[in-house]
Each structure stands twice: as C-alpha cells, then as structure tokens.
Image 1 (cartoon, rainbow, N blue to C red):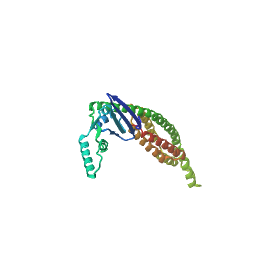
Image 2: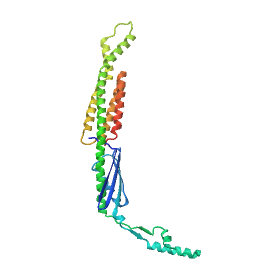
Image 3: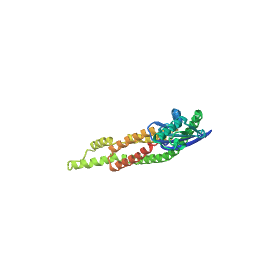
Amino acid sequence: MIKSMTAFAKAVHTQDAVTAEAVIRSYNSRHLDVAVYLPDMCQGLEEELKKIVTRYHHRGRMEIRVTVQDERAQESGFDVDDVRAAAYLKALKQVTRSLGLSREPDLTDVLSAGHIIVPAVHDPNQPLVTAVVSEAVDQAARNLDQMRRAEGDHLYQDLMARIDAIEAQMDQVSELAAEIPVLYKKRLEERLARLTAGQGEIDPVRLAQEVAVLADKSDVSEEIVRISSHIDQFRKTMNAEQSRGQTLNFLIQEFNREFNTIGSKAGQAALSHRVVDLKSQLEKIREQVQNIE
C-alpha cells in the first residue's frame, strides 16, 4: 500500500451551536512534522490534536489550521464601559468650558471615543469546544488519509510500470554483457596481429589467458544478480501493508550504485547507452519516491 505525502483535506463539525473547521495540508518531509494553528480559545489543544493526526499519518510535514465559531457568543449582547464614558464626558465638558463653546457634549461625542460599547465577553464551554475541535481534526485527518491513499494508487501504477521497464532493459544488459568476452577476444587478436605482423602466429593459450583476465575485470554478472534482487525487493516493498517511502529511497541508492558499476565496466557503446537509459528511468522513479510516505 502506497501513500502520497502531498495532499489537502478539510472537515467541519458542529455541535450545540459550536462549529469547528479543520484544514490540513501535507508536504514532503523525511519525518513526521506537525504544526498546529489555533484560535485563542483552543491554545491548550495543540498536543492533543497532534496525537490525533499521528493515528493516521507517520511521515510528512502537516499544517493544521482550525477556526471556531460559537453562535452563543453572538447572543451575549454588549457591555458598556461606564467608567470610560463618564471620564470622557467629563473631559469633553472641561474642553467646552475652556474654549467657551456654547454646545454641550452629547451622546454622539461620547461614543466617538470608541470602546464605550463593546461585545460582551463570552466564556466558552471549554469541554464542548475541545470535543468539537477534536472531532473536526479527526475527520480532516481521515479525509487526508483517503486522499493520500488515492494519490498513492496513481504513484503505484507509475512506479510499477517503470520498474517493469528497468527489468526489461536489464534483460538486454545481460545479453550485451554476454558478448563482452567475445568482443575483448576479437579486439585483442586484432591488436596483437598488428603488433606481431610477420613474426609468426599468436599463442592461443596465452591469448585465452589474456582474454580471461580482461573478461573477469569487465564481468557484470554480480551486479546483474544484485539488481534483480533489488527489483524483487522494490516490488515487495511497494506491496507491503504499510507505506515505506524511506525503504524505497534506500533501494534507489542501491540501484544507482550498481548501474554506475556496470557503466564503469562497460566495454561497448551499446551497453553504455543502455546504462544511461537505466539511470534516466531511475531518476524518474527517485523523483516519485520522494512523495511516498
């Protein structure tokens, strides 16, 4: 089962006039990193919400933003700051007398000071707010998990097709590698023929020894066997019950090491070109694997 690390989800939950909306965005990350952004009334819930997210997700950068609306707070009315109003009116009257103004200050003048009539302070039902926010985040985390799984299915199809292509190319690499001893023998014969022109025939035993030494140095059979093993392990990891992006990333490094070794031993242009194709395909796989949880 493959899960992508890049996704977006949200959820809204309402209970007893309290509504919470949770939005989660996730990005690539080597580890699980959760950041929570909450309104003032929910500041104490950060750790609890992080625990909820870790039930469903084990890797990636998570950004959770929560908004809360309490309809009861809108029904609480307003408070009047009598002390501020009286002090401001007193100051206005003093200015009026000092300037010899004929008009007495009125209500409009007092209200212009601001913060005279303010919304009443509402003490939220904290257990209710906690329950509503927790449920909204839990739903959003589950929705995110579904989206990451859906995206993971697309990644699965793409990666399995690419690993199949690599396996097919490795069959061609094996065929080309089998031709290397014959190729070295022909090259060595031609070179020795030029060097010993007119000096007699080449010792076939010595020639066979030299060809054997060169063929051994250019033998890539071990690398081919290891790559075959990596392909099997890659498929098993892709079909594992849990998403294992880090394991896949490690296998990519092993693939690259073997391809580099084959490239350094390649004794013919066709094999070198095949290695270039393999590394190009591997790079595309590596880019996709970075998105896997």
